[in-house]
Amino acid sequence: MNICMVGYGMMGTWHSEALKKTGAVLHTVVGRRPEAAREFAERHGYRKWTTALDDALADPAIDIAIVGSPSEAHEEQAIRCLEAGKHVLIEIPIAMSLAGAERVVAAGEKSGRVYGLCHPMRFRRERAALRRRVAAGEERIRHIAGRFFINRLVNIGATGYRRSWSDNILWHHFCHFVDLGMFLFDGTPIRRIQSHLGPCHATTGIPMECTVLVETEADQTLLVHGSYHATYRFYDKLIVTDRETYNYDILAGTQRTEAGTAPIEAEQDNCAHVVTDFLDAVRTGRPPLAAGPSVLPAIRVLQQVQDEWDRRHGARSIPGRP
Image: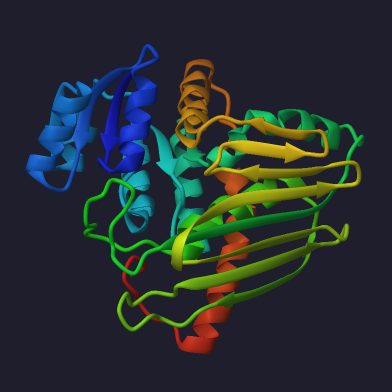
């Protein structure tokens, strides 16, 4: 299978390194800047590079497009890739609005191609046994909590380069945690959503703090909070059930339970499972673990938070979310 990588940031790197361990062919890179696209292609062994997505999509050799561009471009580029007849793996988030997400899902269903999302929290192997017990009724989730704190007063991402785009704490980072909650709650109806999304910062022009609380009709709760103002990073998850407490420290690479602390896979190694699952889904014609329609429950929560912010602060375009 020939791969077209749209974007050359951190996730483009992670996906490329994962793909090298499969039978896939690194075929074409699409990037905004010629020099950066060329350098990325040469570094990872892609056969071609271009700054024109339509040129890459017109190539019949391309089987799969991976959309790893800035969040605000995902919706439009994913739809173009699907309409060109490619299988498409889309970086999180699927779109920056519920309406946009529904447009991508509609295009995906119409295309008949395999399409899915990079939601790596779903792929954590250390949670597989928990999911089986929950599905069997042997264990019940009571509370899920997530924290994401990072310093984003200067617009430099994980690659160390100054970005040409702005991140979004709600639609990007909180999408990970909210989707994990909706995935583990597995369709339990939502009773109430409460939130705080801060005002736009004078320097960055974006909200810098966010808190989301979701309650289900089964009296389960999901709490996510975080800030782009932190002077150092926090990134962890907590799951409390009726029989155990699971604390995942992603930065330390550990899981703590009553029995003690054990190592877990690093973020990049865990993320590689997204690629291998998607390639297998294309080969077999099955939906991937993070299929397009399955992410809509999380997007509906995010949209309700965004709607509340719009009512409070006035609906408007901000950096990273036109």
